Image (cartoon, rainbow, N blue to C red; front, side, top):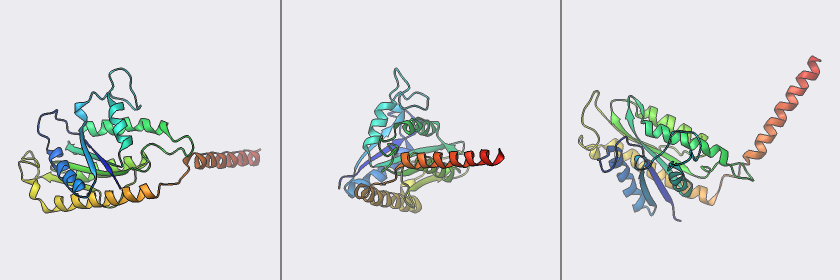
Amino acid sequence: MKIKVLILNCTLKYAPEVSNTEALAKKAVKLYEELGATCEILRVNDYNVRLGIYSDEGKGDEWPKILKKIKACDILIIAAPIWFGVRSSVAQLVIERLDGTYEEGDKKTGQFPLYGKVAGVIVTGNEDGAHDVASNTLFNLTHLGCTVPPNVDTYWVGDAGPGPSYIEAGGDTHPYTNKTTRYMVHNTLFMAKLLKKNPIPTNLKKLTEEAFAYSKQKEDTKKDYAG
């Protein structure tokens, strides 16, 4: 079973500048490929992505090119550096642009385009913020339709204050980061294969109609009682 992995590198750096976040992402890629998956790392800053909350923000916007790749993948990994304790502005931009997919629900089921995809997160930076970046990003991706298995965040953070980042500090040998990277790869792969064989059947459109009908019935009952 062929599984496609897309890693969005949300570094603030522009190519060809070296990205610490990409260095950790490449370790995940190596593991994925050893297990038979195909991978692509896409540096978001290589594209002209406009600010916005729609899937296409008009002339010059290259987000649709990235979104096409997202829709074609089975596993979506957001790789984000920490800045001021939170995810990078590029990672925030990605989440905001993915908001547009809410409007692209399947005509029959209403499921969003990210339904059936598995999410993970890679984080690098100095000091604190890894848990904040991982928790917020994975939470956002579940709302967009992604499935989040256990242990699908991997991160490396340096000491307090300015200092060497992942590459310079020798993060490559950090046992905890190497462990969690393997957890992420294996669990996302397992879940992606499971979902390919067993797609989520939930009909969001039907459930939404039921919810609104129930709410209307309750409101009408309250009005009748009050009258």
